[in-house]
Length: 388
Image 1 (cartoon, rainbow, N blue to C red):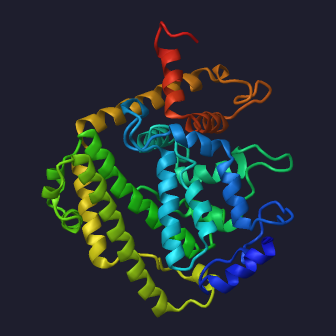
Image 2 (tube, rainbow, N blue to C red):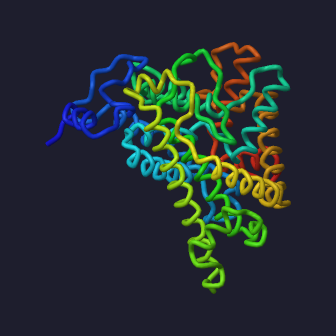
Image 3 (spheres, rainbow, N blue to C red):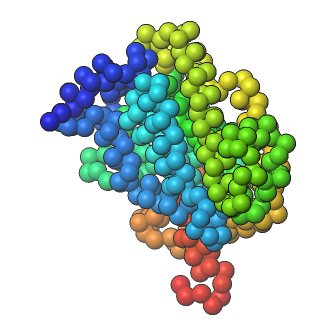
């Protein structure tokens, strides 16, 4: 039977010099004894999976709200897809898969209901109140370090610094690193960079899948994309498929495969040229090493812009986005006007709150909601026939 020390020794033998080794992890915020069987990153992953915030991802949506149907991706299915893609990349590059998985599983915990529409609504509300805006990377960090209540000796999940830095500094087209005093000078690992690219890759390709399924975009909408045409050619062309669903599955599969192979080949060349001697050197570097080739970047940007025009600005998506923002605005206004409508566990009756504290409590509460719960709460307040 392998114990933790055996696994750590195996990492040193099998992982690349630039990979983050479990035995080299920094100290947790609250000191704890090591686990006899699991490494620190395996332990982080397990804590994330068992958290309340992770379970709620099942009913938090991406582009299409939960009312649109059961097929479309939720935050949970997207998170699993990012972890799967990340581990595939990490294994090929001889990185620490457990660290990649932990960061991937936690990277979207801070998203409020209704995807980016909900985040924009909360951000606008806070900024209008002259308070710091809402950033889901920061909120993920708050969940992991403060808001989850599972342990008697500390708040949060007490994760390793490498996972927390990967969350705070996560960046894609949709995700901005949070500038904060926490780990300000701490560099990211290559494992965290892998999650950034895996997230971006999953977003682009799976939004195509959901967009085609919804009918908000068509195959014809994507024909100007070189990347789309390459994927079609790789599967023999659209004429070989009478079943359009089968065509969709195969072309999305080809898109993902092409991008992963490009990323691996280009990144492998960069790693050989840089020749990092350790993960410590990686953290000191200011350069993002995990990357697509310049040509793939251009092709991805073009395809992303097509989606921005055709899918994200489709009238059905705009309607869903506007409705979601109205729901968040309405709920926040109701709670601000009379916060005692919140339960005592959320809004204490014994405490005197400042404006900033009141807004923070309400923001955290709404951000923790699933789409379904937010819709039910809104119905209770604004449907005169709803039962409270």
